[in-house]
Length: 167
Image 1 (cartoon, rainbow, N blue to C red):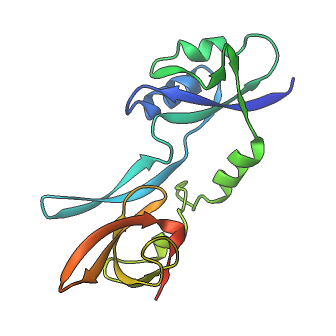
Image 2: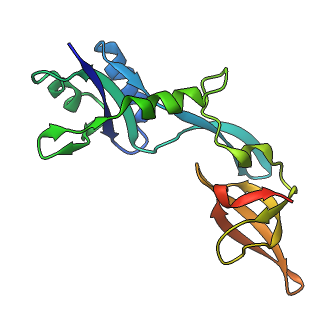
């Protein structure tokens, strides 16, 4: 039987719960995660976060109604569907995500990961194109926070990670 990947929509912050229950039922699931630095009360720690909040992927056979038990799994809201028909996710997308994982199983998020707080960067597109700034932190999976020094003051701006390069 041919199998395909499908996107599973979960309850808020229940991605791990849904993944564990799907695995216990014998489904092959995939929850891409990345490591994020979190600051709170003068402490900094690394935490694991889902790359796609409220989503994970499951691989099931295409034929019949084998996807029905997924919808009643604890933590699952439903499958991403068109009407009642689940929409398959191309396998190359899952393979691409898995190929970006490090040895700890974390997806490495591109060039912003190479930057440390305080590194000088240049914005390469958008309204601040050509402006140099200081790297502050990762905002989420595809945006970064930068400090711009303008008019004798510092301004925090959020830009796409792809629009930043080392100065």
